[in-house]
Length: 172
Image (cartoon, rainbow, N blue to C red; front, side):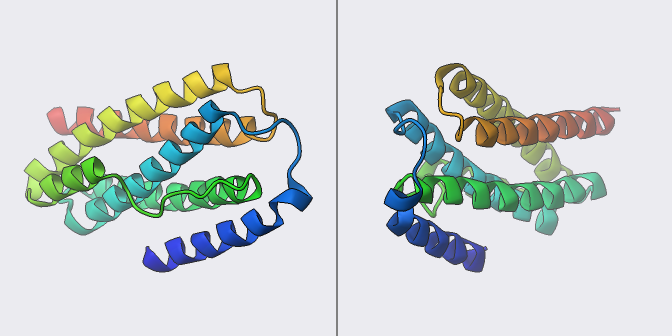
């Protein structure tokens, strides 16, 4: 994870330096900037939560969802950092203190307790991420940001559906 973040930071710095040569379209609005920053932090948290599922889940479906989330957020982070770098936006390389606290609480659980708590957290955060992405789609007029928002929305929707399905199977 740290190697990936270092690579992303280097990519972002390189693109930020080249931003004047490559920037196109409308200037980045404060709303677009805030969405990119929050999405990067959320994506880093989702990646870390996915890793926790891979390492701690007792249910193979939860572990597999963790792998899927890590792979998807690795791709999303590359896209977010590349777009933000071109726009001269420095994205955070760490999750928020609140996300870190949630992860610490999750990793204090074991077995089925971990699986249920992890799925509940995934469902909650994916619903919020979907809401935020839908708001951004309604607010942005930037044709370069829209595809990234759509990819983020699609990814989070897929994760939500999977987490809900696994939770439903575990409840039976």
